[in-house]
Amino acid sequence: MRVAGAAKLVVAVAVFLLTFYVISQVFEIKMDASLGNLFATKPPRYKCGISKACPEKHFAFKMASGAANVVGPKICLEDNVLMSGVKNNVGRGINVALANGKTGEVLDTKYFDMWGGDVAPFIEFLKAIQDGTIVLMGTYDDGATKLNDEARRLIAELGSTSITNLGFRDNWVFCGGKGIKTKSPFEQHIKNNKDTNKYEGWPEVVEMEGCIPQKQD
Image 1: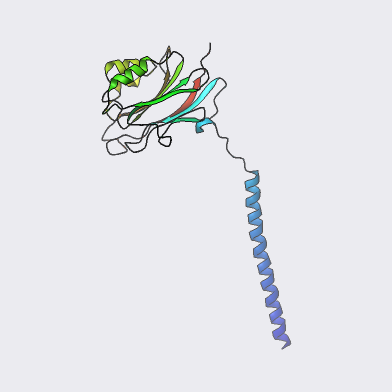
Image 2 (image 1 turned 180 degrees about the vertical axis):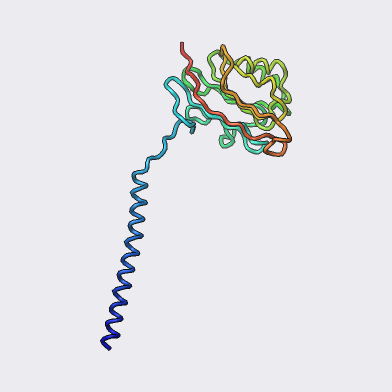
């Protein structure tokens, strides 16, 4: 009987020690994880989610063309989403956002249907843009079919290089300005090519980010 009692005691002690060990290990792991989360440094977030901060007297921007005819384009300036599907202010064709070159304040947002619409209102809109205005453009579905030489010339005067080659269902994003003296460095263009298209009938989305110099007096 004494041997059986001693054996039970030994087993009970062993179970207690094992339980204590397991609990202590779990607690230590949780403590390590908690301390790790406590002292971990979150990567910095920059305006519009761009990859690095802009220097002083520059405006941060990020934009993306539409995805096929399903997801609309997105234009962000200074952490302010100017156009997107969520805001319900984008549409088929060329989507345009205008901003003040000195303050970054949004002036206007519009889209012009270049498949089933008329290019004339777009031309009048382009002609009315004031000097010193930041111009951001992105295509959705098709932004080229109704473009004529005059519209292309007016966009080229804003600093675009690719507008002369923009074709049916190409994806294109551009950031320029009225009164710009040189060609803009902010432009991305992917041709609609059935051999390389990511979507059936459309190329992949083009994205672009950067820092726009603030207009100086």
